[in-house]
Image (cartoon, rainbow, N blue to C red):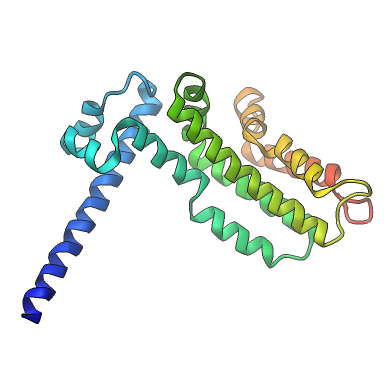
Length: 214
């Protein structure tokens, strides 16, 4: 009897593993097709063909196109880079180093997930599910900026008269969706140049003169 139970558990584990692999294959295929054709022009059948699964599987495992888009949003707004970044910043006591790390982290996210961000920003005005997903992602994103601003406030690093809320707004202004995209895509700056400028500008905007040392 225990042997049969163990076998059943092994089968269940393999099924779960296969489901995870299948789900990720569809997410990866959707990401490529959405970037190439756009969200609305891409069909579930095309995603299924690219992922080498059935359309029914894409619906049951991924929740169709809306589910795929949600998974992509979660990848960049709630991934391991976010939790790792929070842990790292909690261990830093140098305000300048905190801002430079935040800017570097933002750059990495733009380089890794910029295609998803642009897709969601373009789709949200025309699709309720995309708009809802963008709202969730933005709340997470701004929440992280608020965490950084509070960390700077706790260190006594904010310039005189600047609240943590106002610091959050300023950080969002420079490191929100538009910052890197404008400098890199529109101005044709390198990511390195954009990162250096944005980091310096945020430091100058939020840190007190005794802390800012650029």
